[in-house]
Length: 348
Ligand code: 5AD
Ligand code: SF4
Ligand code: FES
Image (tube, rainbow, N blue to C red; front, side, top):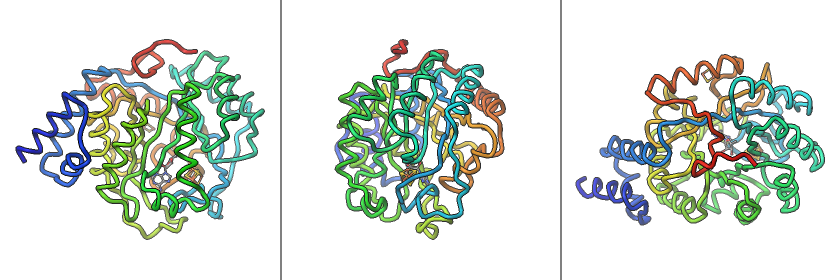
């Protein structure tokens, strides 16, 4: 245990750990408090007490892929499908701006209805509001990523989901791990701020594999990393899995903060879906970002990645007030800046 505390201390000052050291911390639950506190200190030192809010628009729940864990998978016939129009997306973004959001995250399934040209129009319209824009729309060609970047997209989220190639290719039938890695490389090369991340608690995922995930984050020097517990969804082939490993997800997140001290780390929605204080726990264990939903109406309910997803019956106005209250309740403040990595306050 003394030894583990030394490892945590080393990570706190040197921001590096070996695979064995990561495994030893993840394997022991007696040092969780110390780990979370260390991540909290590093978070405070490098990215301050400010929390960045990103307004999330879930613009289509239609997906051509068939990931075994995800409620939006192609074969899920129990989902009411929807697509937002360009006008609706612009309207939600405009309202998000009026609530003080500085960033819009456009997230959706891999839906080919939104062609390159349609996406370019949507990107340009949101950028005309003077907001930072993050895209989270899956695997695209280099040319498409380039066109979106040129249209003004600032950031891109593409979780690697797991760095275990075999597990990935089992869970994401028809998808290739190499393509995923290549997409992340392309995004970095094109000058996006790149976000990735993993789920924790997938069937057959191991502590070794979490260690590989963390080392991969460090290797690609991701600018943002979202880590969420896997929550089994009844309408998927993984209905009977266990999942719900909130503590392990928090630990993977905390070590990620220790090793990548200046990046943006969201307190994920999946964490709060497992515990009513999940996001606050995350914000006190290394996270510095929250992504409240700014989609209106019933769409939230239909964006059913997993059961128990929070905020499905709430309005954007309610969530904005709710999250500000929560953030303030732990002595933190909502940032007024765009929240790029390294505190660049530009929005280009
Ligand atoms: N539980 C938790 N997270 C999930 N995601 C998809 N399905 C689930 C689930 N059942 C995550 C994936 C995806 C992100 C948008 O949601 O990591 O990248
Ligand atoms: Fe589609 Fe993403 Fe869900 Fe996979 S995880 S089915 S790519 S929305
Ligand atoms: Fe949506 Fe709290 S953030 S209800």
